[in-house]
Length: 330
Image 1 (cartoon, helix red, strand yellow):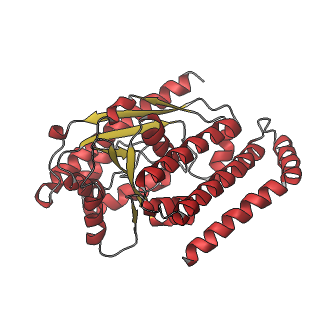
Image 2: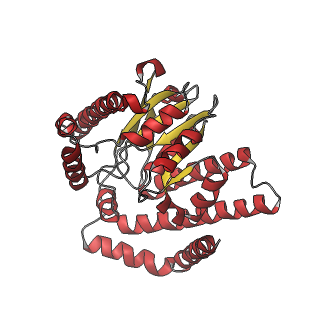
Image 3: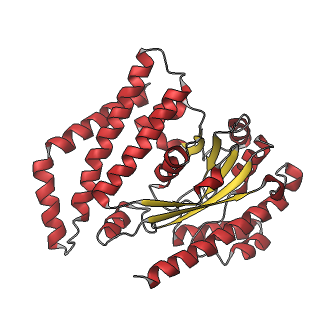
């Protein structure tokens, strides 16, 4: 409760402050951009998105408060409707202020459920974009595996708890309860259900890739050699994905990659990207029949890990080809 009082009050303070100071920060940010030769005004545009983000979040929190007052905290359809509204409005705000739009290729690969979505993780916007794709584009009810640090976002914290999601404690010394929770999370997925996880565990960049490969190499040199050709993704962490596969014997698996968010893993990278025209982000999905997914029980983890590695290497090659094509077209 204390955490939410702080996060909600902080959110409202930021929303009011950013709005009240528009006459100050807008010309200052715009001038600073022009002095640096950034004619597309990335700082001003990012702050403008910050204003819209703060009020969309505040509105979402207000709706959760109303649902609580009307004793509908357990109303899943109402909260999924709120999640769809949140994702759609935030994507519209990104498009309006920053010129970022998303083109989804093969969205039908996510229907029908149950399906497990294993997605690339490359930017600060990945959770939002995947929520937009699953809820607004495809019309599914997602169940997320999220790092617990995201609870700092009050809307995500509150709605995330009222819907079936799991906030993962990545620092625990005992992974057993966490993996059991992932199995339970997807156990009763229905025709409109999708379980979402980012197997890389964190946003990819060259430094993290080198560190991850070095860590894999110390424990499994054969696996490290297999993953060495990766240029864009991180080695997938198989435990969480395997737990979700074990948790639902009927679910197919979908894998997804995207291009267009490269370098947007830091705020400095975001400003650099916004300083130039941004082509639409491509979000590409491919479905894999359950019969083509190896068992993920303890006795078959080596086989499952190799399968996941091969899929991730394929995604990495597809990302590389997409980036090469994008670069060739300017």
